[in-house]
Length: 621
Image 1 (cartoon, rainbow, N blue to C red):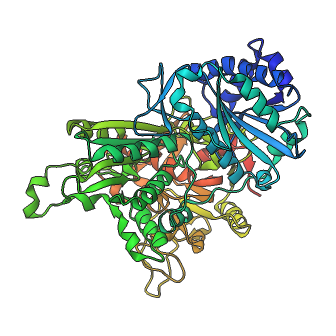
Image 2: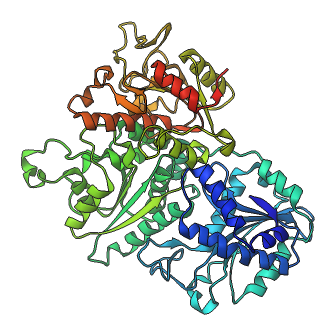
Image 3: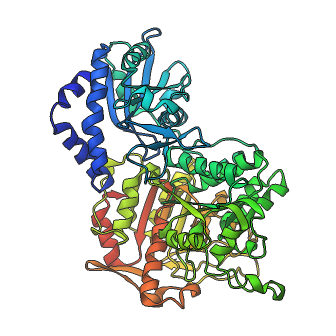
């Protein structure tokens, strides 16, 4: 929502503005805003409007709850106008806090404890938060790539006095500043140096219409993070998680208490980016750190990318089962990515290691390091025996006397930053109450959801996107056999839908007639020629995603039905009826949330396809 500062001041005098913001929030995110969010709109926006009008900036435009490009993160407000000296467009990102008292978390510089919120996880320092918003907007907004534009950040604690937040006052820099009620006059003077009184309407239009620079994909970021020591920008709870880990590491050698950090979040919320950032930072600071997953494809790809110039780096990337014989606290940190893939046990033990044979896999991982870090999405459990959950990790850690700290990454960066799309998928598959709802593309212009009438249309659309420079992949439910290559090395067209036939991705690590090995299917360009299954797609992202619903999950009336006879994955043979249904829905949830900018759907079942057409207005050509 956008308006001039004068209009904002006029509308904050009644409840209409809060109700309009609530309606917009509900429409975009498919759930109600919290009471604290509504309270923030009611109390903080008037404080901002008064400051702007007192500064004579009545015609500056205010973008309320401005969404970051390719992200569901939202800045409280972005002020748009012209610079008083240069006449160039100028922007001020504003973070509004109702805090009255706050202190730094000991041994940190960017984490805060807020009065009245002591039972919650620490909050990111508001200056660090708004500074990251500024950097992120510059990185991902084409309009702001022009160095002549002026961008600054302000954190305004309008209910606080300097004496009550004194520990927070030292973090300001040239880009971001903190002001309280004590320094309200200073905020007015600062804004007058950033913005002129001229009307900011045209510049606000330009910012809202600016193209977005696509986010860097995970594997390319991995190469920069680990091999070259580059930095990937962490936002909000992502930075909170990283700072909590660094704090735990710093005090781990002087404390008798062991800390376990559990980071949960949906697809694309930045879990793996946190892992890679920590790997780079801790390794550069001479900490003994390794990365572990339960996914062969994910680990192999990381080893391939980051070990391209230095093969020794690949040894930092391990599997969960590698730690069953590791001595207690042998490592400073173990980063357990994709922790939903943790299994109950690591497998057979050697005869000389019987004393460890009774430990579960999660216990082995906790024992291996002074600071174990677990990153997971509980909706991505897709095989029997996978038991990685927040509850299981908590129970194992507390049984060992460990302190457990949680971070919930409730903002996501995949799916074009569309949290609404992730909610839509959950409701569509019955993983969230409320039932399926129609997709509303006008609410999320940065993400496209389409339905294809045939698999040929699905493939044609994805190939056109790939030709335009957008990485595209086809995936499907595991409803067709998966054959070995023929003797001549060609792949068998196992996935057959009418007259359309395509092969699954290659089994194992062989390159077959130009087709990449399974672990590189998601990242090598030739992967578009094969259909990816759950095991090759999980953990990866690409710009455009096509998902084919097979006959293993069909819609009948108001309910989903999982058809065991149509599933060709032998790993599900032992699953009971309820577990089979849950795992099947989780698998499709994973497949549906791989795309960064768009997804195309098709079902082989007529009734399910009819439902897709009814819910999704977008159609492929």
